[in-house]
Each structure stands twice: as structure tokens, then as C-alpha cells.
Image (cartoon, rainbow, N blue to C red; front, side):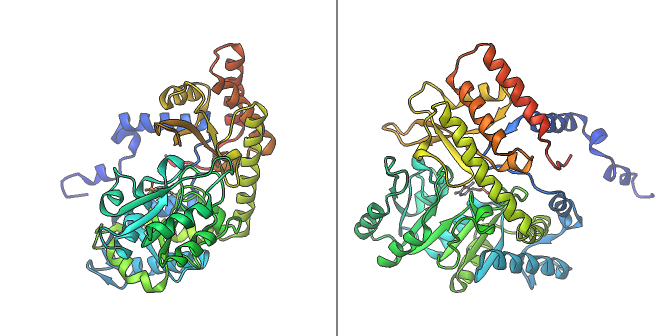
Length: 421
Ligand SMILES: *Cc1c(COP(=O)(O)O)cnc(C)c1O
């Protein structure tokens, strides 16, 4: 080791290189281990994906698309990216796939920019009814670039009113209908929305960020064969590592979307993330993954039953996916106060907006993916629903402390299969 003696610094472990950070990471690990995870947008990625992300590709510049990279020595990365693309296309039956987006929000912007001109009209699900901010919310670039109208839900009917969407589309004449949601516990009828789009000459863009694992497992209708474009995250029910968006599209839209993403929005993608995606799109194509997703659905229904048995109202009346949304519009809960109370008693979950006169209605968004991976069965999910209902009621008696103890016991009995550092 000649040089300046710095080689030793390159091989020093985290624990001594940065004890303060190492302690924080250990704290996070402990919190993960000691809490029941009901965050609908979380899951646990596998060891093999983490190995791919921590591989030598973390140092490789991935500018450009194969085989036209601007940085030398990209042939092996080209092979990795082609593998990821081929596997993604097979998994979702897509004519074209782009696996480089740095997040699924970025993927959405790439689709909009690739297929629309500024000022074009889009029709999308209202964010207070479960839609995602990147589908035209005023505070997002999508809402500032296009003319957006929203459709909502018919709460009494338990979902989107497709006849009303058809009427609205006939009046508004959108260039694109955006279908997809971040807090909507029912299945979206993409085929129906595709027919509505076709009837007014609009494109259909389906964002399946939340349900893509169910789609991959064949347990949720797949919009890819007929939609103009489809995007998904990799880390929700698809159970891959975080950061990354997948774009699937008709072959005819491929070049426009690819160019809109890069160079239009981002330069080099993460080569190591591309490697993890190659692994992921094959890993979830195996029969055991369909078995896991089947249990995820069963457990979401059990969780909903446990909550309903304690008379907590459920948004849209229940679940058809991995997600359950508790309707707290009739209560005094604020998102912060509820989050704190749940965490103190051993639950992590997330709050969401629900339709309301002031747009401020609070919902508690829950999912069954994480605890199903950890081995919790339907009976446990039902029990967790009951314990959660008790905590939401907001009293502070010894029964709450007992609920907290039981939840921590469940967390300990359902270990996370693998975590990184
Ligand atoms: C989570 C989510 C996204 C955003 O995913 P990121 O990778 O975090 O950007 C986009 N659309 C929908 C419907 C989502 O639920």
C-alpha cells in the first residue's frame, strides 16, 4: 500500500468509519424489528437484490441506453440492462420497457412528457379520493403543465363511478386518462377506463405502483396489453428495493418515452439499481411469489374484518387488494397525533387524505404486504385489526398498554427475513 495511505479508508467498515450514522442505522433496524409494519407502500426486499445493489456496478456510469453509452466499458452493463428489460416485458406482457427511471414519480413525468404536449387535457383520479400527486395535482409539475380535470369516487357505491367518468370524458375530451391510485383499496377496472378513453380518442395511462405485485402474480387485472403506457414503483407489492420506476408501453410510444426520460429528465441511471431490477423481474415471476401475493390478499381481508368487527368504518367499504383504508373523518385525529400514538404502541402505518368538504378528511392507510412476508397469517391480521381499532378509539387505559405489549410480541414472533446493515 504505497499511495497516500488512503486505501485503508476505502476498506474501513461503517461501524468505525462513522459511529454516529451506524448508531442511527442500528436504531432503524431495531424499530423495524420491534414494530408491526402496516405501511401499504412498504415491503422487504430480498438479500439477492441487496447483493446486486451493493455490487461493483455501484461504481459504473450508466449514461445512455444500450448499446449507445457515452462512457466506455459499458458492455456488461448493457447485458444486465437487456436482461432487466426482457424480464420486465415478459412479466407484464409489454411491447416496450424502460427500466431506468430513478423513481416512479419521474417515470410518470416521462410518460406525460413523452406522450403529451404542454396544455393538453388529462383526466385523473382526485388526490383526495386516492389519486397520486404526480397525476396532475396543482403543486406538482404535472398539474402545472397540463389542463387537469379530476374524477372522484361514489362512496356509497364503493368505488369509481365509471358511467360518471364516461360522461365527464365525453364533455372534457381529454388527450389522456390517467388511472391509478395511492390510497384506493378496490381494484380499478382498467379495461373499462380503456374503453372510455377509446370512445373519446384519448390515451390510457395506468399507474400500477401499488398493485404491480398482484398484477405480476396474476391476481389483479393487467392493463399493460391495452394501455398506451403503464408505470410502477418497484418497492410496494412488487417487493423490490426502493428507488426506481418501471415504464411499460406500446412499442410505438417507446422512443418518445425513452427520450423524455433520458436525456429529457435525468442523465445516468443507477447501474446497481438496474442490476437489482433484473433480479427482481425474474424473482417475482416464480410460482412461490403468486402464493405470497395470494396470502397478502387474504390477510388484507382479515385485517379489514378485524377492524370492522370493532366497528371502525372502512373507506369504500372494504378491500379488494393489499390495502385497507380506515375512515377517520368522524374523529378528532390529526395525522401526527395518530402516527405518534400507533408508534408508541408498536405499529407503523401511514395516514392519507380522504374526500371532504375542506379536503382535509383523515384516513389511516394500511397494507398487509410487510406482515405477510414476515409470516403473519389471517388470524394474526384479524387480531392486529382489533388491537389497532382499540388504539384508534383514543382512550388511554391499561387495555391500551396490553394492546401495545401484544403488538410488540407479534412483531417479535414475525421476524423480518433479511435486512441490510
Ligand atoms: C407510490 C406511488 C408513486 C410514487 O412512487 P415513487 O417511486 O416514490 O416516486 C407513484 N404513483 C402511485 C400511484 C404511487 O402509489
